[in-house]
Image (tube, rainbow, N blue to C red):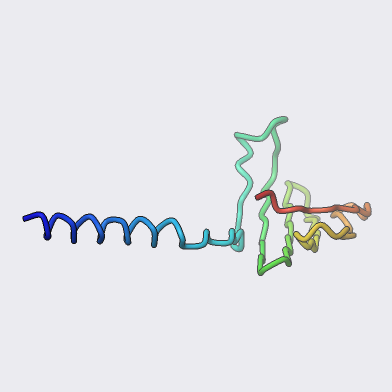
Length: 104
């Protein structure tokens, strides 16, 4: 009886050590994201869609904005999440300097 209890305890410890030692998965935000206008502060109108490609330190966000007007707007921002400054242009032509750092 004691031997089987000891074996179960050792198996339990090995399971715990394996689970703790496994590295955490790197976040990946890739996908198609849609803005929920009802939850925006201040309230927003129009359809806003983000197409995100996230691979390693590279993060590309393509924003499409469709309002009631016939002209839609589109912007592409490219970031690196390694702390280097990224320069991108917004949908209205403004230039943005951004530094993205992954928080541990």
